[in-house]
Structure formats: structure tokens, C-alpha cells
View 1 (cartoon, rainbow, N blue to C red):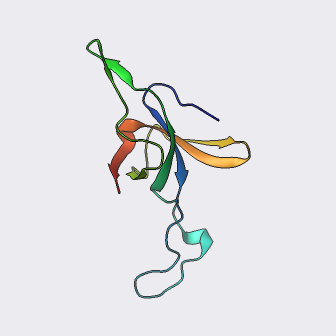
View 2 (view 1 turned 180 degrees about the vertical axis):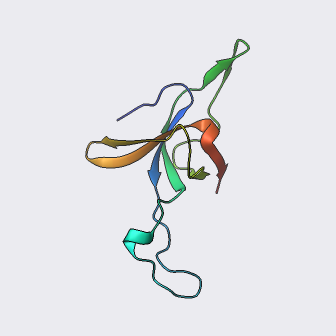
Length: 94
């Protein structure tokens, strides 16, 4: 399995609801990529001021990340699609 380095986090996107609150079905062509994901793997962290700062999420956490994350990289590993981002683009844990 893939092991990210430093403060990178490997994510598996979670599908968003395909209906609006009013019951209107959103076609696949109009959907945005989801910004919710499950953490698959994390790096060990980074060094700041001589001290190691570990990554604050762990595999299995469901997180919300920035839609336009500057560090987001779409990757395919063993035929499955993932997103690789820096921890700083994670907005919070759900």
C-alpha cells in the first residue's frame, strides 16, 4: 500500500447526495467533486523548529477539505482513484 511522506494525506472521496433538499435530482454532469473524504493513509509529519509535528488525522477519519486545495493531486493506485493533499488543506474532521 502507498505511504505518503511528511505532512501529506491520502484520501478517498465520499460521494455527495445526488438530490437537493427540495428533492431535485442533480445530474452527474452538474455535480461538483465532493470535498468530503475518508483518510486512507498519512505521512509521519514534519519538523518545525527542531521538533517533529505529527499529522493530526488518522486513517479512517472522515474529513472536509478545501474544494480548491492548492496541493490536491488526483492519483490512481492499484486501479482506484485517490486524492493526495497536504494536511494544511484539511478544514476539519467530521
